[in-house]
Image (tube, rainbow, N blue to C red; front, side):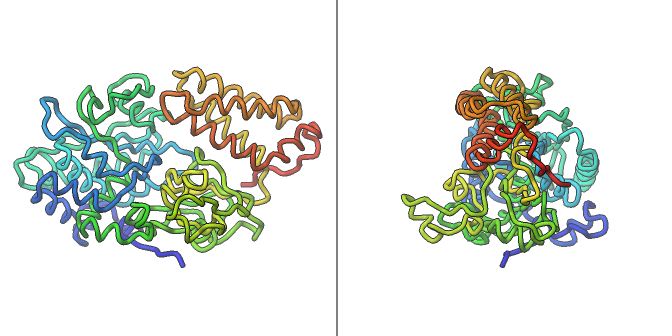
Length: 448
């Protein structure tokens, strides 16, 4: 059974859940008061003990990232919250900003204090108008109450929070491209090193964290880092706490659900998601946003050299707990933890073509392998779907995708190449059928 929780979502559905009085009625901002009475090192220590793996896709440990920030610096420090949320199939962060924005603001206070920052920028995707309005209103309420400002919560420590609107570019979900955009420049990833902790926003030490990650920090401080971590079933993987799980596509109850880390895909799809639309068979599931390689329902766990996987060795991947390292072990990624479900009514070739159209459109164009490679993949997929491609071009798809992987400044290229390689490998016959029949015998298309 799925272990549902309601720490992040406890105010979801309440009347005016976004108001300060509603948030405080259940202990809101108690964690910030607790954190400001601790040393910065102690706060970071609690976050480390919580094992909060980054909720934005990369899965890097939040406490570890904060520990990279210099303890003392002549330059100001910044906390930047990544609320761009442009990953197709991902819609969890906006629920926090719209329904429980004060949880994020409280996390910002704790994070800013922990890393020595005075200013926090929440970078929100342009299209999320309600989220921006709710955040600005929450900031105004918190400022009037004295939680933000020159003396945050009465302490001689100034904390200011700002909402910065992006322009709807997917590439700005990458942390250094986001920083470029925040500075008013074209959104293109930076070469690393230096990393943001050394030279981030405006050339100053910066930590960039996801909305849900920062929100989870407030929960970890409130209950204690170790207690938060123990909510998860993936202790051996240092993947702690609770998180939001999204599910969309061909399921009966698409949405966002909060559960302890360690939920399985089977539980997410068939218990929380209500099963497949029309009670059809499962074709495949993209586990955490479009950049994650697809998993098939008949795949099994095969990780013989890692004792942590012993309990699931040989079992179906749908029964593997959803974690950052568990999914890496089976050749995919947890990503944003928002699964896209495809029933057997879907055409995998058309689904793949849709993805490649997106990546070709959203490539920033800075790196030649990505700029040209994504264009090649899009054109070849278009020829395949229209019955005009050859077997040689199908083979070329894998070569082009492989030449993108590992040859770009940021992970965008890998995010396009990984799914492409997985689709061709796992649905090879479907691609060949398009070519051999000239596209004439293909009747399946993605259904709404």
